[in-house]
Image (cartoon, rainbow, N blue to C red; front, side):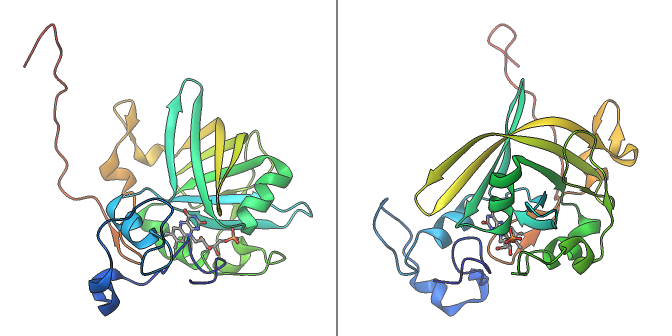
Length: 223
Ligand SMILES: Cc1cc2nc3c(=O)[nH]c(=O)nc-3n(C[C@H](O)[C@H](O)[C@H](O)COP(=O)(O)O)c2cc1C
């Protein structure tokens, strides 16, 4: 099993180019180890695409930290809540536990390289804003800085922390949202302006493909 500081729970190899992938079992029963010692490869390539939270936090001593988390999503909007999953105990999780606050910077095409650079297993005393060359800018409500170059930011306070075996779930209430005017059109964020990056398998990513509309059926007025 890969060192948890380097990975997000399993091998980060690209299954599409890895011979060992052909031996990967295609089913997994909870609690039983698979060929890789965990169902990471099977599940992280099946549950895709995932958005990427580029999470900024502050250590208890004030050191800023940045790290991507694709175990991430919006799970409620009234009041708004997001979830983050940490595979093992990393600086991000420790900082969130210590301070109760974090910022999700949106991962889009134009910050892709810096986002990836921040996945490095740097020691806790390293300021990862400086390391990857992005600009810290103050948040409105929480203490951790935002990444100025990101096109959107969710300022969050911890609502719940849950242990899931070796994993940890952070439920954060979104207390302030920033969205760059450049991605705002017709009263909402336009995906083709935001250009989010999608996590697929290991080090494989995607960008938006064809966009289309699908109206939802209504019982009273079927389409
Ligand atoms: C795109 C991407 C998504 C990742 N998602 C997660 C994740 O959801 N959970 C996790 O624990 N690690 C994830 N990782 C790995 C962490 O970013 C990596 O272990 C990082 O060094 C943790 O930094 P920290 O110790 O400063 O928190 C991801 C890495 C990349 C490149």
